[in-house]
Image (cartoon, rainbow over all chains, first blue to last red):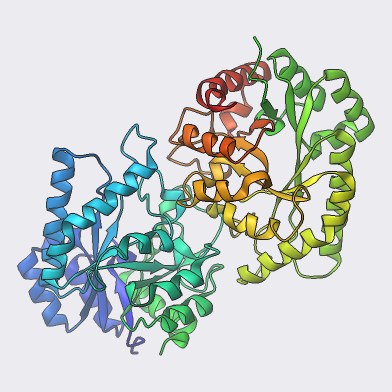
Length: 278
Length: 278
């Protein structure tokens, strides 16, 4: 069975798979695209990863992830900027058009969320030339506000666009991840504003109650409350024509077999999202 | 020891106290104001509650809570509207200037958050005349987006104001509750926009990790990451001169003695919020 031609399996959905296992699962389930994470790529080695991806015939929709640069100036911040430069190079080498950036939370002991946000913008400013030269879009991912203190001080699409618009199109963009932004009363207006700044569209569903680890409360599309019809139509209308990743953090799904997860992801996507794509 | 003259003890902070116990704890700790909840008031009886409050000498800063009217037309919705009318009458009888409204989540099986939000506005429209006649401000409380599906489809102050501004000032306003809105990149601008629409200011702190029940992740001011200085200054600058409630949902605090909680609330408020109040 063939997956929707724009569907991409984000590797985090089968978190425990090695890169070869993830590529095999995606190919076996009929995918044409995969979203990679740096850790399994590094475990395989970058050169070997490039070869494996080439052999698979899959496109790489994005590389996750860079970012985590809210700290004040100092050695830790320099290390973060350097690591993001390496991530840009990896994305380029793997043929990923987008490097997904998670801002990072408040530094330990800090209550200055305004300052942390300014340092996110400044870090992207330091990286923009490298990204432009590599042909990789720095793709800011607003995370759900429940992660604002410890993971991402960028919480809304509008806020991500306020940063992205300070840089040329194609150099800095934003992710629309349904799990993170579905609740936002400004969502559809901000997607329209984003236009070609949308550099990645990621989908999974939201359901309550949240699990004890709130990072893991994501679900197959269709299981929860998110209206994929209106959000997908808005992303289409904004002009996005790239791959659409399913990225699910969920312990039960991680415990399941890779082929079964890839197949269920494919089928749930077709019914809920694929039908609304061009 | 006397509490800050504008500090109010929201009864939810000592959830297991009866109304007489809550009033005693507030008086003993030197408060001049209390925020009441309908359940303990109803347990004591409305007439007896009025007498107890009068005897205590405390002001009533608000009554929690009405709302929960996202359902479609039908008997359940009529019951909700009727119950909100009773809540307005109770607030008036108790001398509470504000009735706090929590919107309610998505109806079971629904993915139509846009429609649910419209029904919130329509319900407030049905109640506005009663509220104006009673001299009670319908006070919309935006809740943190992590509650959008199951508790409140109103998630930001801006969204609450979009509704409130459709009605006369004093009839419909909004709560600024630091726990729910601290993360919002538009917060300070929306507080300025709100001006005298701010009908209640509630404070408690945010800390991670969240507990397994995400409703209970609230803390004494100063324990977490919220910058009470900037938010309080903005609420002051907007012109709010009413009482400031501390409302903490936290199992450990609920398990503690009422007098100890009232005292620690008073002291943590003085250090973190009171110093920024006029």
